[in-house]
Image (cartoon, rainbow, N blue to C red; front, side):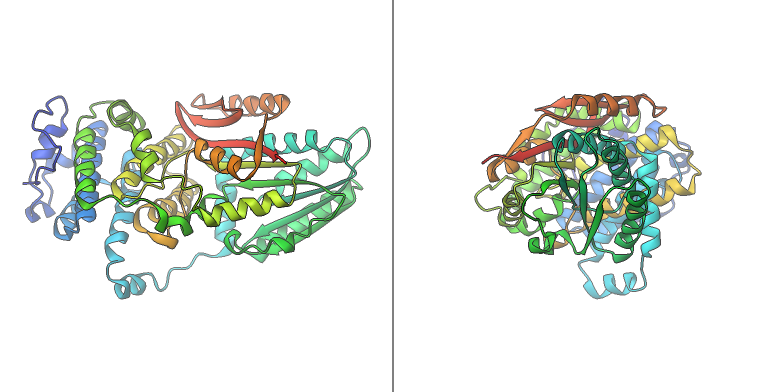
Length: 473
């Protein structure tokens, strides 16, 4: 029998999972009972949640035999081209298996030795993501409008793009600036990216557009990771009005602060994991997003626990603070920041598993509502983008774990701490963004204001935040 975890109670009676939680996870289930395959989608989703949490609990406790049995059961029900829960379970299962394999570095390296992703494939997947979801488009609209309004009357404009991967944003800005009543400024864009090929494509596209519109333009490419960026190479000049755009680039800098995060005692982790599992067993109805939201939002409150699990450590957060301080030192007239509005930076595996189930369930639901299950493009985005992010959140620790998404309030505190002050986002930009969401052909996307910033949601689940900042001298 599955061992009852501390905090788990036999009084849970309102869910089909009462039956599942008592079910044998013995090796004899290698060939599952026939009725497992005959489950309705909702029942299968509940059972997959139960199995994922049970498996993660075994992985966290080092009980690899039991974890292996759970993984074998999940593999009978999960698949990357099924319904939302089957698809997401496939990627979380792969992540949990990868975490187990990391205990044997030689085996892990051997199994991954021939894995390679072509730059062209990465570029394609990013473009597909840009097209399939409205999130980056909303960021483009709000960022560009904020820059246009902040740079009114400026003759020399310098924009630093910390993730120069999407030329469409700056093509739109060039077009808008070329139409200014007072005439276009001299525009310089500094683009930062790890891959030279991406920067070369951007330089060609933007230079072509600027020449067509007769706008004075320079592109300054910097091939670098954000973590190793040399601020001097940004070449900010006296007399330039500076704007900085950061799209999903700040959270990896939290990796170097990993050792500063509070560690719970093993006993506390076991207690917490047991409580999480018990609460997951009580979920009883709805789509996958609702399966998690309906019970866990009400009974498992992430706020106090999540806050304590990834403390802000303002005085010790050397890497992120020093980077933000360096940007502050450039005296930007405007900085616009977009980040995932999720807490995937908890100190325990179970915390991260639950929090990432919430947000990735919403992202997979977005695709389920708008794109066919048989779409190869959808599978590419789910596997090469979301699947890799999930694997990093679940399977990696220390400096290797880069996907350390945190909530908007954390970023507000950090930016405020180093000397930035919030700037209200453009009212006209907000209207444009709302129209964009409304015209997306799906009523699940929503936008709301929070602390002077914008949060983009799927249904009621916040997924991304966009905020604007200026130097507070």
